[in-house]
Image (cartoon, rainbow, N blue to C red; front, side, top):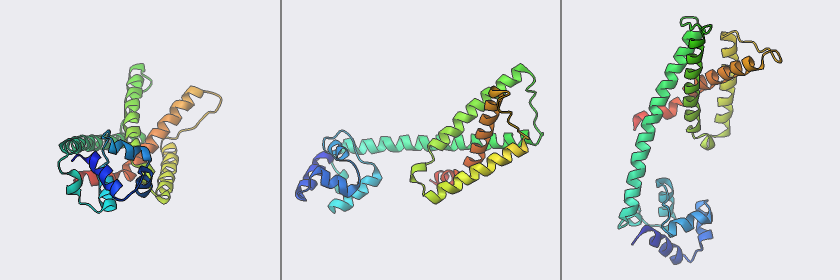
Length: 210
């Protein structure tokens, strides 16, 4: 029996509606309908909850439905590749933070007076910005507690002040809007990079341990 048919069977044995099941699992009725019609499958976390709800083993839920098992195998492969990518991007963020520190301390100097080096610098900054923004988008922000979110925002604010102090940056509001925009963008990216370096480390460490 396929998983979709089992979901219908277990629900009807309990004499529940799709809405009843949805409320118990804290999800939408459309999701239950999608499972029962074989259009999608629950993730592993939700599968455990379904097992507890209907008092059946995971083996019973998965047995005989080879399509579902293959789906989980593909999801696992995709997840492994994604974790590897995130690890690589985190290393890139580390390299970027080291570069920013060396540049701010004057150990590395790029002649931005040269048009060529200015363009290369902006391209690198743009690529690095995409890297850190993607890392942030994968940080599970919505699952974090409010206390953790506040600590991250405070860290971001501290790094913003430190970056401006270290680079001796000053905004000239109204005089050169483009330059102010570029300066603000660089400050934001450096602050995000250093904040991400600290607060994304536990996730990075967790991925490395798997």
